[in-house]
Structures are given as structure tokens and as C-alpha cells.
Image (cartoon, rainbow over all chains, first blue to last red; front, side, top):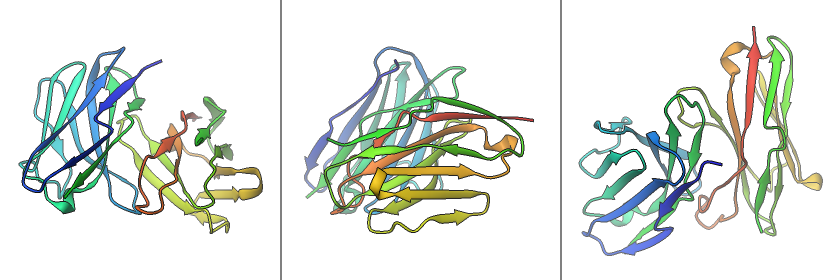
Amino acid sequence: GAVVSQHPSRVICKSGTSVKIECRSLDFQATTMFWYRQFPKQSLMLMATSNEGSKATYEQGVEKDKFLINHASLTLSTLTVTSAHPEDSSFYICSARRLGDTEAFFGQGTRLTVV
Amino acid sequence: AQKVTQAQTEISVVEKEDVTLDCVYETRDTTYYLFWYKQPPSGELVFLIRRNSFDEQNEISGRYSWNFQKSTSSFNFTITASQVVDSAVYFCALSEDLETGANNLFFGTGTRLTVIP
């Protein structure tokens, strides 16, 4: 089956620092990757959609300069939370989709805590 | 250990038929959240419902209805009078961390629904 690996699963960082989250498709080429964020007691919210080799498409209300997404290869997308603040503490999850597939496969998620 | 099982990998129905998608979960926690998401061909997740474990009241929203049975650890989803636009993959998910309400979502493997015109 298709496996998506997200790393790290948990990270704690100091306010003002940047943190990078990786999303890798292990056994398929992911032409499209999705990044989600989940606020406490709320559902998963799509942050952005990234296609390999092009700029990510951000959802309304998501700061593109704050959440940098890079999808430089067919197996790796990264989300960098820049100058993190406590309000950025959340659960981030990615999913990846092959070209021509309608189904996307999810990473395990990353819990970010900014202190 | 937590687990969400969606035993139906694929279902095909003819338009206007009713269809029920099954979801069975396992958890040792007494408090948890259950979710259903829809994933249309475009690929993004569309949130459908969240139910907490204290609320066993069934819910209806338009053509959608959900049957939460704590006794059987099931949270089934029914679409009434299905339409072609309902064709999608549907995910059931479980969250055990009510401290934050959102930690470590455990998803089922999804059910692909095809509605034939």
C-alpha cells in the first residue's frame, strides 16, 4: 500500500524559532501534497495544496510567509513554520496523492508545541 | 489501542438509492471524538461531522444521517437518495485526546463510494 511518512511526530520549539516538518511518500511519487492543521476541538483544516515543482496554493486566511511549503521532489514536501509563536501550536498533518489518483494518503501528523 | 475500521473498501449504488457506510472503532478511552470526512476527486478532505462520545443522539443533516451506537462501537453514515456528486472516498476518524480535542487523529482506510447515474 501507499505509505506517507511525516516527521517529526512531535516537536517542541521556542517562540521565535522556525521548525520544519517533512512529509515523504515512501513507495510512490506524490505529485500533489496537502497540508492540514487541526486546532483544538476542531476539525482538520486544509492549509495549502502543493504540486511538485510549483508554488503551493494556500487557503484563505493562511499566511504564506508564515507557513512556507516546498515540494521540490516527487517524494518530499516540507512545511516550515517560521518565527513560531504559541498560537501556532497545533497538530499538522499532510497527505499525498499520486498523479491520476483521486485518493490521498495521510501522514501520521506532527504535534507542534511552541513555548 | 485505538483503531478505526471501515470494512467496506468500495461501494457502488445507483443514483437515488440510499447507502450506509460503516465505521467501527476501538478505543480504551471513555471520552473521544468521532469524525467523518469526504474526499472528492479533487483530493482535499471535506469535514462532515464530529461527534463526541457523550452524545449518542443521532444526527441528520439534509440527505446525510449518522447513527452512533456506543454499545457496538459503531458510527455509521447514511446518505439518502444518493447523487452522482456524492461519489467520493469517505473517511471515518477517531480522536482520543480530549485535552486538546485534536491530537492524533486515527483514520479508517476509507470507503470509496461510486454513485452511478
